Image (cartoon, rainbow, N blue to C red; front, side):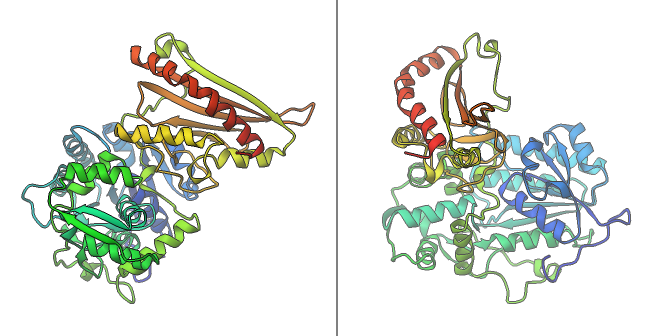
Length: 499
């Protein structure tokens, strides 16, 4: 429970009911347990309820499965709700994401009004200069305006760079600073910013639920320190125990060039990197507001930057990262399950099936299956996967640098490099769906069983590819020679743990 905050009474005499959208996202996944700890009732809206079911708090919440643009789904999700958290963001959409976000906000606000929701809480971004806004910040500003004009009392909290294990902004900062002791950088690094710890963002979000309904408006929230992005990188280096970085800002580096550079050096893919970079072309400093009159500061004040960094690094080191930016689905990725009918792929469905057997205990074999990817690699042919990951990043894909949330454990929806956990039955089945750039759809599946006669552990490894058009078929046959290298060694690795 967050000290100093107290939930208000719901309009039906019960503890207030909160709807959290984006519960599979970075902030939403962390907000839910905070609300539960404060005594709120919680309902979540998710496009994939099976992913929500993997969270440790899943049995304490009501889950509504569906899309936020479906009015029937929204009516069900918002019925009887006291506080609705709007945490829907489409940063990874390549085109028209601004129009898409405004449209979704209009549908949500209309249904919220119809369902007599008592309060909407939205997390946006700090805007110091509304001239020449990036598409990212324009979308956030427009979304906030739509929600505030909904007729439902709305609190719009605006934050800048969020410092916490797993946030996209923090991953960009961490990887740039750790991997490049010397760097030439764009001039926006001289802009001042006011970062805020994720724990403080969550405190404000939870506290906003108890603000009286007659209070509405925009409230900037920021940490206790203001400095340039360049200085933030040096402070990160100091907090992480690294040497001072040599950083030379150059005015010739455009946002497009900077984004490509960020995309290659950090786990953040180009599309997301560009939108984050473009958002930093203006200063990001919290404007004075009365937010702390409604939500009291914690004892000792807000979290200093160095402490926020150290807390985040401890979580990363101890593999206790609850949510990551990569937990959000990649728009355009397949939502259908693994196809079994060749007609689904226009009459063609390619498969590579390997079956291996061992007298190793099945529990140990499963541990190796579940730990595949990330820093653990894939096999003696991990270099081949790294090459494919590099090629993916060159064409704007996510590549391998997303890594894993946890080095040993997986849940449905987790990102594993350029894969996504689509289905998992512990001890029996792991299915990964590819999110790399390719002219088709692909899955990688491991099925584990025990031979009742011999007692052997049996692993069936199946790679499935559904081509799209002529290029899809050509792609399969172009990479086919690599299959004889990567797939046999991967099967041996998960069976015996040898690389």
